[in-house]
Image 1 (cartoon, rainbow, N blue to C red):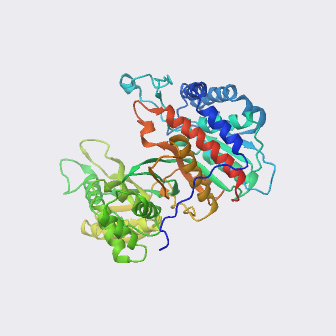
Image 2: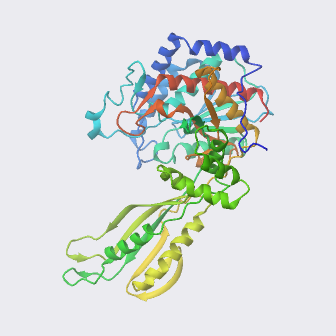
Image 3: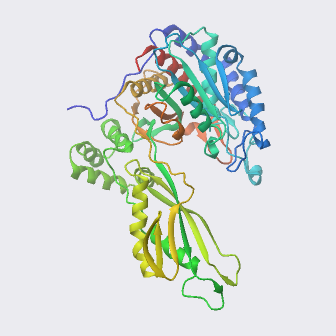
Length: 518
């Protein structure tokens, strides 16, 4: 029988074998470990916070800290800045380019961001070490950004610095791009960088792209590596109710706020039903575990294997997955989710509110679309609007008329995003990434290990601006779940072991990409 989840062999550089071995020896030394700690700690000590509401670069002084961070990078990585071309985009976006000797080879593009989630000053007393100390306790580097995502940026730069130092001359061009407001949607940073790359080099210019994403974890007795190859869409829908105002001493059965509450409850009681489908990247994740994970329950294993050709088995596998205690994550990744996150209405306690509204955030399934979300809400609320005697307008269409007021649905911000194209997993870039992951794992954990290791397609987010640059986009961090502590919250930290693995991963990725056909 043909395998349902074929695995790649570990991919070790051949042409650059001696270079790779020499760098491995350096990475394992105590001296290099201390240098790596210093590099990451120094980056963490600069508070490159980005906020949801910031003005343009040049007008908002909060951006200026990124100038300090760039000064640090110049000092910390002198060989990179002597050898690679650096273009600054919108002042603080960084695009490093290392030209290769063979212009016929599509370049490798690495992404990482400079900014971090702000630290809430009210939590400062809860931190074991100050959030911008970069303290090293012998095992972990502590501080905001240690794991998200200064480790990704600094480990990439360390790999490049080491390759320059060892005399490496790439055949395939290498790009490293770094935005500065990823934690605030990337409008000033990633979006500007993507426009620059597209206008300068053209669409589909890159062989592959690797950005931050999934870490690896223990699952059913195996080590599961699941680079994100899919990305859910996003749409915020505003629901607005208007009804006659007046004095609150003579209220109607339901005020605008009450009518809105009835609609919101109805929406929450009728969520989008998640389904396991063969086109979802998460289905591939589970197929790989069914074939390779030693401790996956037998009934689930068999149902998944048979589901490749049997719809009945697919529904059984879905039922078994959704009955698991920790099924919440799978349901959220497979289906379109909805969350009422904003609400407003009323101006005075003794005045009936003429208007009330809420915003519902939807993360759109890779098997669905924004149009499906609109249709679901329209079909769901039309009968309720009639029952409440409200006129109903949905996404620019007048559905019905009634005298009691209006219920209206519309795109809250005009910034809806359809699900991303799925990255092909039968092509050379995914095979390169898989082989590189396995080689990095073997080098860090010993080739004699009997542990089961699985590389499978997964899901992640945050590459929206770069979709036109390559069809081969991977959202992946070469870190164990145990390497990262408290991402985005108090006591964020990264283990030095995990950080060294990241450096090794980027080194192998660059060297392997230089040798294989993509």
